[in-house]
Image: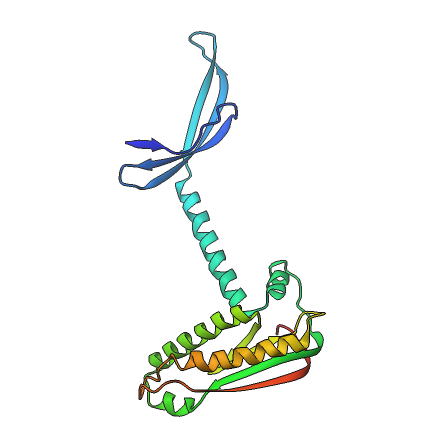
Length: 210
């Protein structure tokens, strides 16, 4: 038993019909209407032809899902303007910034913790920790630049004309928020709260994608 979901536009000689079967599986059919002459009656009739395009539709949906995942990953790693250039196939050249504010943070005693914890536990800790930092960075409007091991790097004031004093204040506020956020995560080897070191620097910078 089929239930028709799509709307048939009979004025259009070709259209697509979506059918949902009783077991909730969806099927797609491309339908074409071709005017023809009925040899038996001599009258104009309509020849209806259809072919199953469900596999094509399913493949397109999977492709869109993967594209969304890739874009989400890119936006989590790179600034929006850089992602836009990469999607357009443009080369991202090094750009000079006269005055920006950069923050570096790493986990205290990370080497000791790593040596006394299973690798999967260390990966889980960094994932939880950096997810917290990502959320905080969105609130303060700063740009995540990179992660290197247990080091987390972000910047502010990268946009031309941005108030560097305001950007610096936001980075410092975020540093305190990161320290508080890190304390929500426990070290896997001794269940102590994670402590981080944070450093902030302001000055000229060259940014680019290598």
